[in-house]
Length: 234
Image (cartoon, rainbow, N blue to C red; front, side, top):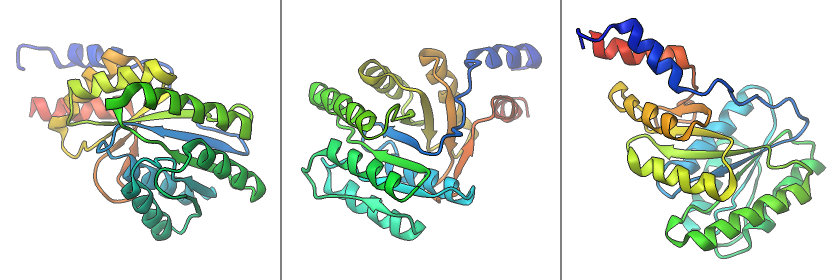
């Protein structure tokens, strides 16, 4: 590393990130659709987002739209209880787009500001998953014009190239608006962030750094790169 000028490296790394940060919503009703494969940390990230919005004084409702896995529904219900936020959930195997519709309708009738909807993440059957996600998006727009406002992809930071190919597949299916990278609890894993963003050129909104509801931090490009370089140059 001594041979590589730190400030030059910093400039190079800064250039990797797209300049268009994802705007925070100022709408009366904002719908986040959460996308990603099972095991990437979707459910925990939904809880973290809900916790963050609640702490900001916004009202939140969750939609258990991963109806493919009973465990996903149960896990999200437990988080909803723990965070004391309402949830719309049905049984395993039920219609995911209907859950999305009901969640948005419920938010509108109760004047809830933030809707967070989970989705299934079984990439093995891409065709089914793709048509289900597209249907959920159409139904969200029916429930509230312009929804979902953000299609957010959850990626596991320890997965490297696998995360990149997952992201490319989801982006092709539905067009991703922003990314949250999870499991970044050590700077060493931070390197994955650069390759993921360089490949995808999508805004990175938050990073997940642990298992607790407060372990979600807004991504600050300069701060992140500085701490990454500190680890290399000390």
